[in-house]
Length: 188
Image 1 (cartoon, rainbow, N blue to C red):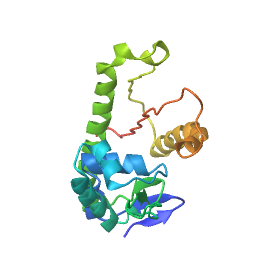
Image 2: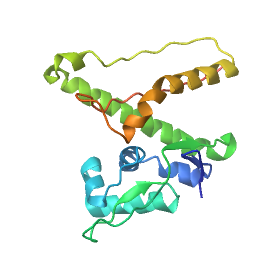
Image 3: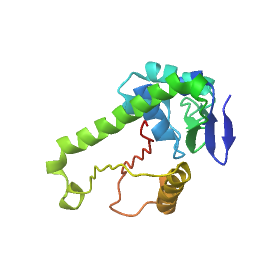
Image 4: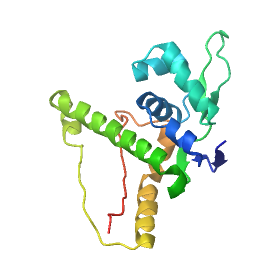
């Protein structure tokens, strides 16, 4: 089972890591990590699957300690689900987890690509202030491992003031914005 540390769900079992490598499960996790509690029916609207298929994926995530059942709603019929933490961290063991991590990275990239493509497809209908907010940039830099880790910490620090908005109050006219970070050492 994963360990939770400071709100992080820490995964080290390759089977648990591989459980993340499914588009429906990633959509469910993205919706639950901020602290929302959703039923299988509500998750189904995010995944495009039936409630029973979504329930299957929720149970798979529960098996690995990533989600758990929430408190029943007032009518007692709806069973909401919630994440067991606020973020997921993979405790990498290159020998044991490489295939599972590769599958998750591929799914992560595909999901972010799909979100960017969906925005571009309807960008012309966006309000003017949102049309040019999308940014796509990359670059190669010569860094030490310590410098790469420092950049990762600095990026998290820049976003930290906005973390409370994931579950708390949000400013008027704000909307959900995907910010994806990927720091990858190039092969020698």
